[in-house]
Length: 373
Ligand code: MN3
Image 1: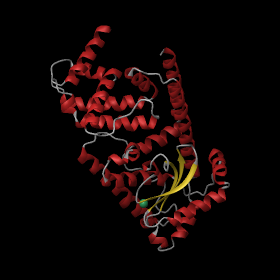
Image 2: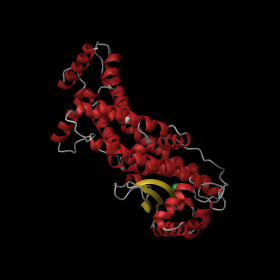
Image 3: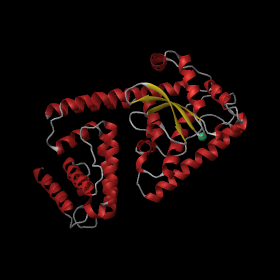
Image 4: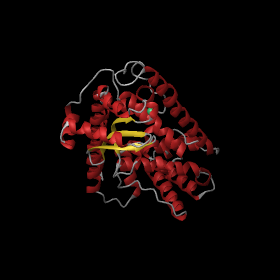
C-alpha cells in the first residue's frame, strides 16, 4: 500500500503541475461556471461572417436566455452547486428544460471563444493531428462543411476529440453537445458551428451554405489549439492513471480504495466534502461538537465507504443501477460521485437522523478515529 500511495502522490503532483498552466486553467474554469460569458469582441467585429444585428440578438437574447433559464430550472430543483460541464456530461439525469438550456449555455460559451475577428490558420500539434486523422487540412474542411450542410433543422457541427484520442466530425440536434453522447459516439468539442437559423438568417436567409463557407474566415485557431492540447493531455493523463490502477487493482478493502481515489482524483473528495457540508447545515441539531464532527466525516474514506454501501443497498432494493466509483475511469468516478451525493441529499433524513443505524455507525467511526489520535 505504501508503494501505491507513493505512486498516487507522484501522479497527483504531475497532474497539479500540468493543471497549473495558466491558459489551460483559464479555459477550464470558464467552461465550468454557470454565468454569462463576456463577448470577446464587438458585435460588428466579425462582419466577414456575421452582421452586428445578428450578433447582438444572438448574444443578448438567445444566449443570455439559455443561461437565465438554466439557472431558474436548477434553482427550482435545489441541486446545490453544480458545474456547467458536470451537468452537460451527466445530462441524462436531468429534465429536458435543463438539457436544452445547459446545452445552449455551454455551446455558446465555447462558440464565442471559437471566433476571432482576425483570420487565422491551424498550426502546431492540432494541425499535425488534423493531417493525421483526415489526410489534409483541405479534406478536414470539406468534411466539416458537408456534415454542417447535412444537419437538417437546428443543431451544431463539431470537431471533437474522442475518448480514444481521435479527431472526428459530428453533428448534434438542438442544443445537444458531444459531451452528452455515449462514450462511443461522443467526445470533447474542440470546434463548433452554430447551425440554428437565429445564428445566420438575417444576413444569409436560405443561403446557409455561404454562412458555413465564411466560417473559416473567423475561426479562432489559437483558442481551438489550446483547447485541443489541454484535452489531449488530460486524456493521456487519465489513461496513464487508469493503467496504473488496473495494474495493481488488488483492493479488498473499499476504504483503502476510496483513500486511493481521494488521493488520485481530489475532485471526488471535494464533491463529497461540499455535499456533506450542505446536507449537515440542514440536518444537524444535536449538541455534540458539530463542526469538528463534520470536518472529520467529510474527508473520511471509511465514512464515504459506509455511506456508499448503504446507498448501493437501497439502490439495489429499488432495482436501480448501483453506484460504481472503484476501478472506473476518472470522469466516470466524478459523475458517479455526483449521483452518489445527489442520492444522499435526497435521502438525508433517512441517513442522517440520530436514530438511524447508518448515522450511529458514522458516529462510531469518528469516535474510534478520535481515540487513535
Ligand atoms: Mn445560437
